[in-house]
Image 1 (cartoon, rainbow, N blue to C red):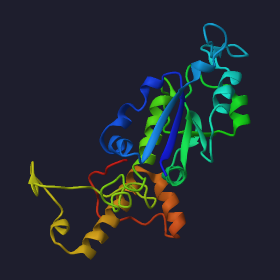
Image 2 (cartoon, helix red, strand yellow):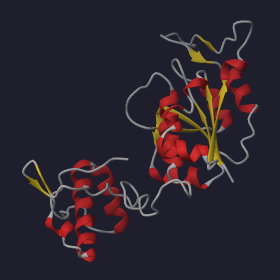
Image 3 (cartoon, rainbow, N blue to C red):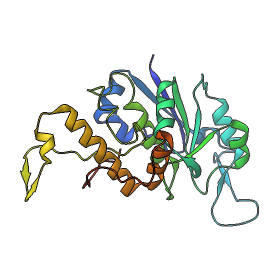
Image 4 (cartoon, rainbow, N blue to C red):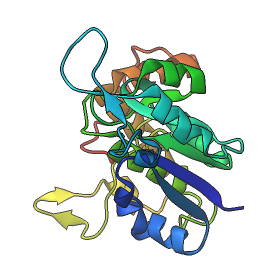
Length: 248
């Protein structure tokens, strides 16, 4: 079955956007997934199709009206797909969430604009409120693109190697180990000898230790959760010092 994504947005031309390129774009062409952008202004009020109004209690900016957003949601067949609302007020979006979304039939993403969406329609719809980071964007479309890209790459047949989705940041609660390629010497810097040894067990051990070191140094929150989950001593120092990692 095709994994179906729907974006509720005031700017439908922003989709597929970057999702129409590279891995996601090729998967889109092959029918592994689909994306539909619904213009919420089609559900706006009056001849000017108004979708927002001033906030009760005063303050700057405008708020998207609950009746307009509710009409847009009601016109979609969720068919078991979760309704997700990206917002700085949401809980942090985690790789476990992405895996859950990717394992289902698809996802519907509500893209907010202005100061946000009326809280009542979020409560009534049961939307999952998630945050991609502690910063504010102009709208939810960029966050929706991030979420969809993370999901699509996990769909069967999208990535070239099944190991790629396993050996990367957050796959097992750790950040990914540093990556190296040719040349073996560059700018006075050498690739760690163990990676040139051909000794698979030693390489696996080094990569695990490097992942632990990077996670402990750069993401103490992930490190604490990882140690709690494995029952290990959080104060333990992990493997050799690592220089860099790739955040996905």
